[in-house]
Amino acid sequence: MPTEELQRPHIIDIPEEQQGAVYEAIGHPTATKRFYIESYGCAMNFSDSEIVASILGTDGYSATSDIFEADLVLVNTCSIREKAEDTVRKRLEYFNSIKRTNKGMIVGVLGCMAERLKKSLLEQEKLVDMVVGPDAYRDLPKLISNLSSGDKQINVLLSREETYADISPVRLESNGVTAYISIMRGCDNMCSFCVVPYTRGRERSRDAHTIVKEAQDLFDKGYKEVTLLGQNVDSYKWLDTSKNSVVTFANLLAMVAEVDPLLRVRFSTSHPKDIDDEVLYTIAKYHNICKYIHLPVQSGSSRILELMNRSYDADWYRSKIDRIYEIIPECSISSDIITGFCSETEEDHQESLAMIDYAGYILSYMFSYSERPGTPAARKLTDDISLEVKNRRLSEVIERQRILSGQLNKKDEGKNFEVLIEGLSKKSDKQMRGKTSHNKVVIFDVHPEYKIGDYANVYITSSTTATLFGTIIQ
Ligand code: 5AD
Ligand code: SF4
Image (cartoon, rainbow, N blue to C red; front, side, top):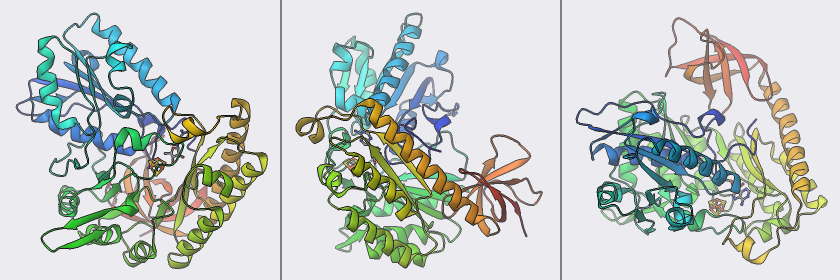
């Protein structure tokens, strides 16, 4: 069950053990130098690291998973909660201990922490040589080269245009079956608790044709599932100047779904205020668009939602849930929930617990509120709920979700699901692991006629709160 430990905004299934993932060596025929990269936080960061790998590839670098052979050590960071930043600081201290014996090694901080802390990472904390914000990755070769002058380097300029649309990501840590495609950057929503609008800048959408091309290239290479990524995918909007028409998120979903019926399409994250009927009907229409929506509620209390500046109230959210089940009856829904936001009462908390049951979430990512400097909540509200109460409420939402996930998984027993096989089970090489369209993990015995990347029809025989177990039926 995902918990507070998962430091990732805008979810998407990055297993806990992959947080801080380092990447296997990727040979590059002309590479003379090695970079090592660790990624923390959301799927967007993991996806950005693949863009960084591509940019560094053109500068003579290839990836290594051995930090001791690296010329360049990068950490792609997350600022969403204080704990995420603490983890990165510890890693930077470790990198610096290696640097004492390997003086030539360059240490760089990328991503949200770079953007939030800017120069102070170079000046006060003195832990790094280079600080590069999420919109400045094209500048990496120049910054690296400038380091030879002896001066530390920084570029944290945010852009209103950068989408890295033309860059072909180098797939790192790939299972060869599923991949992320970034469709937009930034966020204009200004939820009061959230640092993302300040670290990732204004929202902008990527050229739809480059997205479809990336999906097609992945499919041609054997990939079977793409996840379209953005902080708020439903507000995707791109003007096709050649046709003088606007491509909406629903249009984009259909375009990617039409790459091939065997290419599954997922997306994340949806904002309840922006997901509309057009998107829901598109999901319903295409078999290969997964019947799964991550629709963070954040709180079940209308009073707290107002303070969070989420632009919907609890009734409005419930009506959105009703609409999803009406248009896509087999859809599964998941959520993000924050406990102990400013002034949250026991009644507010009870409303969050009730929302879990109302919405029937198959899973939730649950966090206790962590005040982030500079956000509207930090400026205007008081972080007045004690850590003890925040954590107690967090345990209660986790428990409520755990019970519900178990009940929903039990209901899947005795049913057949189309499962995309993603790899071997982590516990046994005699078993395989895959996912249903509605985003449930299924474990089943290896079958001689099925390999990784195939679709299998699996009959569910048993379940736990986190996993379905079954057997392939032909
Ligand atoms: N404190 C706790 N959780 C937060 N999130 C975002 N900002 C904060 C914060 N300051 C959570 C929200 C968001 C998810 C990605 O992280 O639930 O949807
Ligand atoms: Fe943060 Fe809200 Fe934007 Fe998500 S939608 S990144 S929670 S401001």
